[in-house]
Length: 495
Image 1 (cartoon, helix red, strand yellow):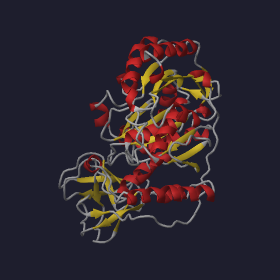
Image 2: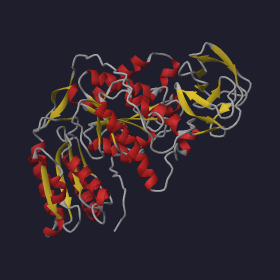
Image 3: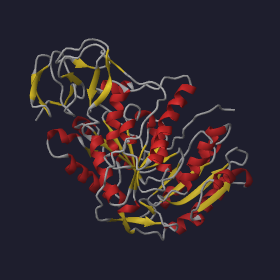
Image 4: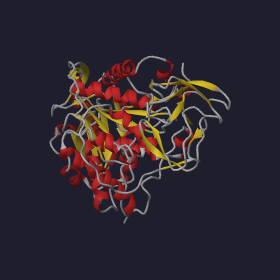
C-alpha cells in the first residue's frame, strides 16, 4: 500500500493516506517515487513533491488550489500556513465543451411506490408540514400520536417543523413557500397534512399555488384557527390519509425513475480521493440507466466551476451555469462577505487548505456525465441526467433543497462524520476507514477502503447496489436513529 498518493500527474503535492512522521521515506502512489518528509503530515494532508517557490501556483487534481505565500521545500507540509486562495468575485468564462458521452446501460428495477401522478417514491411516509413555525408543536404532537399508524405499508410519520412562514419578505418568503410546496408533492410521501395557523403570510392558499400538477387526493389541509380542537381535527384527517396509504404496496419500478441528490459535508483530504469519486462513479451509472442526479452547494464549486461548464450539454446550459456561479458570488458580496470564506475549521483539520482545494474534491461527486440542466432554488428536476441546483453549502439547507428538487434519497460523503438526516433517506459515505469504524451508528457505506485496494469502478458498483437496497426499503442510519429534519435558505430581513 502507498502512504502518499499523487492524484494527477501534474500535481506538486501528494496526499497522506496515513499519518506520516518527520524523517520517514515513503512511496508515492501515482508518481513511482519515494519522498522523505521533513515535517509530520497528518492523514489527508499534503506534502510537497518538489520545491515550490513563493508566488507559484500550487497544483492538485491537475488544477491550481492557490498560491504559495512562502518558499515551500520538498517534503514539507503544504497547508494554510503557506498557501492562499486565488479566488475573487464574478468573472467571465468561455464555453469550451468537452462533449462527454455516457454509454447507455440496460435499465433495472427496484420495488418502489408508484404514485397517481406517475412518479415513484422509495418510502410511503405520512408527512405533516406546518406552513408557519407557530404550529410546530401542534404538528409534532399530531406526529407523535400518528406513529401508531406505522405498519408494513406506512413506513414512517414525520412532522417537518421550521421557524418560518411569517414575517418574511421578497425572495426569503418565496423560498419558504416553494420549498414547502415541493415537499407537499414529494413522491416519498404517501400522504401529507398541510397544517396552517390562519393569519400567516405563507398560508395554505399560498403553498397551494406553488404545488404544480399533483395527486391532490393524498393531501389534507387544516387551518388551526378555524376549528375548536386542532388535535382532534388533525387526527381525523391523518386517519383518512392512513386509510388511503394502507392500500399502497411496493411494485417493480424502473431505476430510471430515481433522482439522487449528491452532497458532501465535514469533508477531509481523502474526500476527493475516495468518497466523492465513488459517488461520481455511481452518478455515471445511474445516468447511464436513464436516472438523474443533482449536484448543489454552489459556493463549493468556486475554483472548479470550469470543469462543470466545459461539460455543459449546450451553450444555453453553459450560460445558465455561469449565472449560477456569478449570482452566488454576487449574493456573498451583497452581504459584505468574501466569496472565499471557506473551508470550515473541520475541513482544514482534515487536510483541505483553500476553497479551490475543497471545490476540486467536491465536484468529483458529479462524475463525468454532461450537465443537462441548471435549477433555481426550489425548482424541481424536469430533465434526466446531471442537474446543477442553486443552494448554499450548508449541509441541512442544501440537503433539504435536494429533497425539494425531487431527490428520493441523498448521498452524503463525509470525512469528519455527521448524524443528521434531511427529509429523505440520507446515505452517509465515509472517506476514511477510521471514521467508519468509530461512528458505525452514523456511517452507511465506507469508501475509505479504496486506499487499501480495489478499483473505483468496483466501489461505485457496490454503492449502486447499496442504493438499490435503500430504494427498495433498507433503512439508512439517519432513519434508524430517527434523525430527519428540514432547513430552508434564509436570505432576507425578518419583520
